[in-house]
Length: 438
Ligand code: NDP
Ligand code: HSE
Image (tube, rainbow, N blue to C red):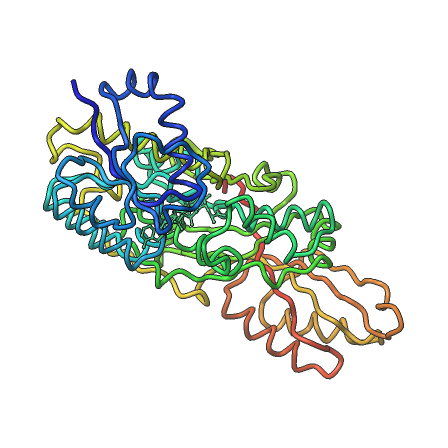
């Protein structure tokens, strides 16, 4: 049988990784898919740019719509990024009856509901394994491998750039900006790296994971998002002193009141496996009612790890080219007409534990005032440490760990603490999760 013809949009980090992996493993991939997979045309902005892959035999163009409209092409692989042009290209490809593979989480998180509806109507597939956690097959694991479970919650380190930065800052005391520059050079970072450091990329990915886990529509706008740019070396060191690691987590949990959907730096007990996931590696911990906790680990970014997921999607699409559209695995794991309207909780309704750091005057009674405010708000303290005065000042860092409390109560308590005359600067708040089996 003839090879399936693929059109590639983008010849950057992931595009080139895909060309390389398909070429190197072509024979085994054909044996798996049942047919060869051949990239016949590819689009990039600048055809004179040196590429890290071999493009001989691929027709190159600067017009991505020429690829999408090419009648010879069966599958369009979108690796341009962004959610403007990419959306138009993907919608056009679907309209042309072509299957789509994409690594673009921004596109899926923001426009996935419309894209999947169009794909359903046209009977084509839109595969997006590479959009979450790079090379880890987490979409397949949740959508298919855990299909027998009621997923209770999941938590993941789902941005490789952010984890790389936090790890290098902790282990080598490196400067934030310097590590970010290296992540960009290594091809890990988004075109706009604020997506990585401000948590937007992780929020895109968490949005997708929550939909697949709970059978809810994609709701990116409802995701609470905080990045890592305010994490200081002091907080990292104090957390370690208390037996915790700070990780940038995406966390979604089903509660009686609704779904928690949140991305923020989080203290995790250092004994948890996920607390020891370092560098560009990602990990997702999924709690199913039948299987219990399962952990998925692997490279979260980079050319070939991401290409691994893109090529797996290509193989999946090729395998089902002949199958009945009604019986394909649904895009969001649950049948499109069976999605649930569970509400997403506002952040102040969420319950979690906290790490608090405050700069206080070193005099009697200050600690008592702080603990009284917390006590009055019904917040109980798990641990407390007071450091030596900062050099040349009479001010000390006080670090507190609390038990779980509703975010609204913590907001009130922090406001009251910041109003104390003896407290200087803002109170640093980092949420804390034990991620145990309970
Ligand atoms: P790059 O910036 O490395 O590559 C983008 C490619 O798209 C380039 O080849 C660029 O051309 C091409 N391109 C951009 N605009 C146009 C246009 N208007 N017409 C034609 N070609 C265009 O991005 P990545 O490979 O890093 O990322 C691609 C996608 O994969 C993004 O959605 C990203 O979020 C996602 N992703 C990335 C991962 C990673 O590790 N990098 C991991 C997982 C997902 P030119 O080269 O000529 O400039
Ligand atoms: N910029 C992303 C990251 C790429 O660092 O995780 C992988 O999605």
